[in-house]
Image (cartoon, rainbow, N blue to C red; front, side, top):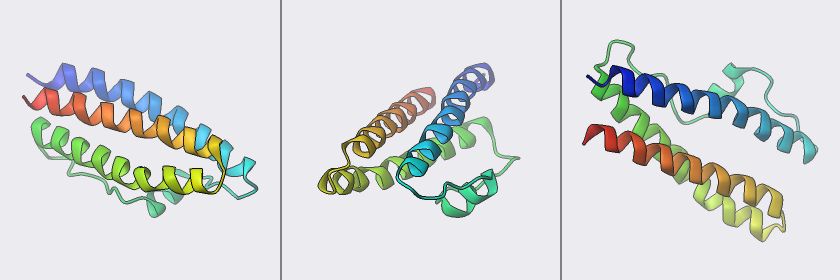
Length: 113
């Protein structure tokens, strides 16, 4: 019963994340640093690991909720660090990302009831 709703929501989130990776990479380059160039490099740097491909739809949604919470929790302190460093652009980018991940977590939790 969850398949169509999960498929639609995750497709929307996947598209948004693909655009975000580009925006984040551009910000990293703007700051004079080298951005990861491969998805595998992002995966090595990240705290989220691939899920069980045989999990039920509900378990997959729970994993996505957890993943969005992990990202949101990692972003929160970085917003203050960027602001303290006088980097309002990065703080704004991080705030936008926090909003996206909090909303995604909320929408996914709503699917679980």
